[in-house]
Amino acid sequence: MEPDATTILLLAAGRSSRMRGTDKLMEEIDGAPILQIMARRATRAGVPVRVVLGPDQETRRAALAGLDLRIVEATDSDGMAASIRAGVEGLTGPVLLVLADMPEITAQDLYLMVSLGAQAPQAILRAASRDGQPGHPVLFPADLVPELAQIRGDQGARDILRAAAARVHLLPLAGDRALVDLDTPEAWAQWRARQGA
Image 1 (cartoon, rainbow, N blue to C red):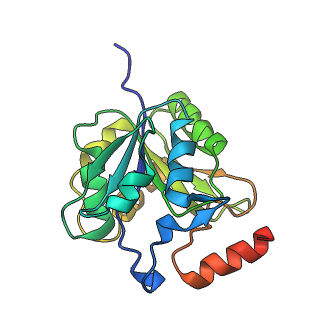
Image 2: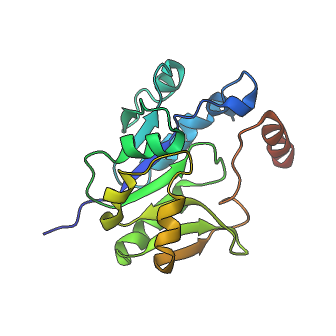
C-alpha cells in the first residue's frame, strides 16, 4: 500500500498581538502579503497544503483566494496547539509544520524537506540555521500525527520534540532563514532594512 502523502500545514491563525494594531501576515513584500507569498511557496512543493486560520480572519482568507489549498479554521483558544490540532484533523500521513511569518523559507526548502522525509519516514526533520541552531519548519512522521492531534497549550509541538529527541535530525538551511520570523514592527523594519527595501 502506498504511504499517505505529506501535507504542508501553514500555521496562520495567530492574532498578531505583538504588532500593536496591524496584521503581520498582511505585511507586504514586493506588493503581496506575506501570507499569500508563503502559501504560494507551499503549493509549489507538490504536496497537499492546508492553511490554518482563526475565526473572523476574512482579510487573510481573501489573500488565499484562488490558490490550490484547503483552509481550515482553528476555533479553540489555546494558541498554536489549537492551530495544529485543527490542521492535522483527519490526516494520516506526515505533516510539515510551517510558520507563515518566515519570509526567507523558500519553496525549494519545503520541497527538500518533503523529499528527505519520504526517504527517512521515521525521522523528525527540523530545519536549522547554517550553524545548527534548531528552527522551523519541522516535519513530523506519520506515526506522530495522532500525538499532534492531542497537544494542548501555546507551546506548539515542543513536548513531542523533547520526548522524541533521538528521532530529530537537523537540516541546516542557508544562512539563518530557519530562524527568521517577523512578529513585531521592529522585526519587520530590521528585516526590510537588511533586504535594502
